Length: 245
Length: 279
Image (cartoon, rainbow over all chains, first blue to last red; front, side, top):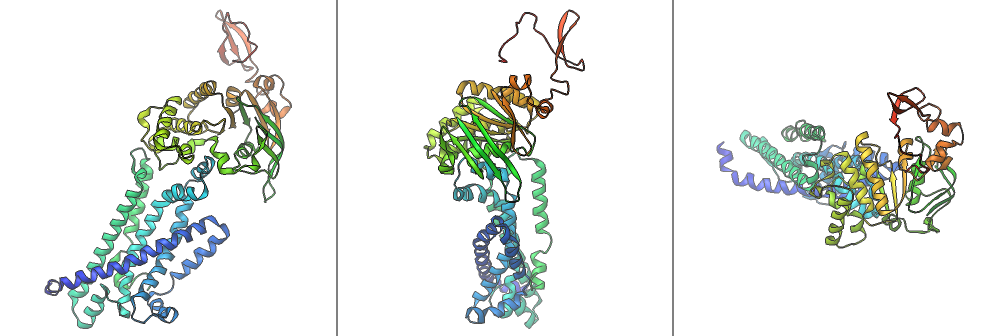
C-alpha cells in the first residue's frame, strides 16, 4: 500500500500512456475493419477468404508478432510503433467479422426499400446501412477495446513503457503491491473504456431504446452485452498476457 | 400507362421468374397482379422501377422505355409501398414520409409541411410525427408507408403485398382507405397480392399469374368471375370450391344469400335492383 501511495504519480502517468497505446490501435482497427468487413459482406466470394485471413492473424502469438515486426517494418526494436501495429492487426482481426455480421444483420427489406425510394448506393451506405449496423459494430469494438488494453501490457516485455511495466518491474524487484497496482489499473482502464464506447453507441442509436421497441429484443441485447463483459475479463487477460499471447 | 412487351426474366441458375409477358396497365386505375408465390408477380412489379431489369423485352411508362432511364431518378418519381411499410427504423415517422422529398432536394420546411398534410391524407394523427416506426402499430406503419409512397405526388404507385402482415380487421380498414385515397388522387396503382379476395376488392383490373411467370387470365373481377379462362383460374378464384356459387333462399321472410354448402354469407336487400356495375 505504501508503495502505491508513494508512486501514484507514476501509476497515473503510465495509465495515460497506456490509454494512448490502446486508443490508437482501436481507432485504426475501426477505420480498417469497417471497409474490410463491408467488402466481405458485399462480395460473396471474398467473404470466406477475408474472414479466414483475419482469423488467422489472431492466432499469431502477440509476443512473437511484436518482435517480428521491427525487421519487417524497419522500425527500432524498442519502438512503440511495433506494439501499435501488432495491436492494430489484432483489432482488425477481431473487428472485421463483427462488421461483416453487423451489415448482414441489417434488415434486407429496409435496404431494398431504401433502394426502391431512390437512394443512391453511396447515400444508402452512409445514411441507412452504416447507422443500422452501429449496434453490432459497437459491440465488436467493446471487445476489441478491452482486449487491446490487456494486450498492451505484453509490450512491456519488449521495452514499451505502460502499465505492463508495473508487472515486469514488480516481478524483478519482488514488489507485490506494484504488480497488484498494475493489474487493478489495467482493469479499471479497460472498464472505463468499455463504458465510454457503450455510451457512445447508445448516443448514436437513439431509435434503439424507444419505448415501443419489443421488450424481448431489448432483453436479448442486454443479455448479449452482459455475456460479452463476463468472460475473459481484463484482469485474467492481463495476467496471462492476453488471449493471443 | 405501363406496358410490358415480351418481358422475360431468367436468373443465372436457370430459373425463369417471368416468361414472355405482354401486359398493358391502364393509367389512373388499380391493377392487381395476383398469384401464388413463385408466379413472378413481384418480379413484374419491380421491373417498373428497375429494381429488377428484364432479361428480354421492354417495360415502358407512357411510351418511354424505362431501360433507357437512370434508375435512381426513375425510382424517385414512382411511389413504392412494401410489406411492413419498409420503413427506415432509425428515422422518425415524418422523416420517413419526407424521405423522397429530401432526396429530391425539397427544402426541409416545405417537406415537413407536405409530410404533415400526407399524414392527414392517410388518417394518421400528426402527434405521431416524431415517433420511430417501432413505436407504431402494424396498421399505422403501413399508413406511413403509403404516405411515403405518395410524398412526391408520383403518377404511379407500386404496392408490393402492402397489407400482408396486418391482422384482418386492420387490413379491411386499410383496403377501404386505399380505395378512398385512390378516388381522391386517381393514381395509377399496381398492387401485388396473393389474396384473390383482396384482388377482387381493390382491382379495377385483375391479372392472374401462374407458376412459371405466365398470365393465366386478365380482366375485370366480374369478367373473371363470370368466365374463368380455365380450370387453374377457376380453382384459384375458388369458383369450383363452392364459396363463389351463391344462391338466395327465403328464411323467416327474409332473403338470405347462401353458398353451395348452405352457409349464409349475406342478406339480399329487398328493394335494391340488380346493378350492372360492382360498385
